[in-house]
Length: 154
Image (cartoon, rainbow, N blue to C red; front, side):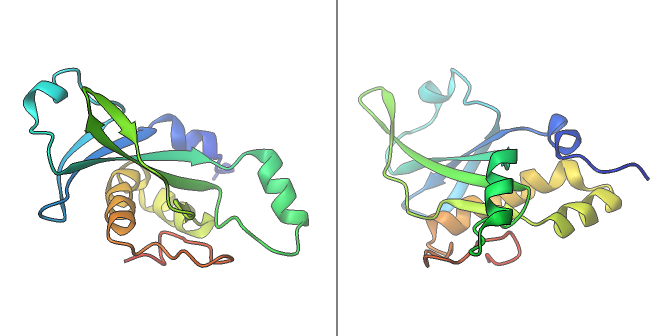
């Protein structure tokens, strides 16, 4: 088996996952991949909703090298999902203030296991929803040195 490269994993998956979250019902009511369609703003009732954007990104080489040299580790894996939230106001999306911890890491062992099982393409879709719900429900740990991984959130 050839060496697994992060670029290989990410080239066939979506980078952005948008979730429409009902503030009233505390649940996700819709999902879009890569971008919100132009018809979205016309078709969706935009009151009492939050738009959650989960961006799947690789760790930069510079970050990895710094983390490796540091006595305090801050990275939990080679890929992470980063959450941003938006509200629709005055015919435009307004970014909301981000919580201190808005990243959830995919550990290397987790990625390798899913790659071997042939489920790598579908995990980001499934797990990005898990990340979005955990963020909105306050289940992403906000402690200073805690590293949130996909295995550590409910």
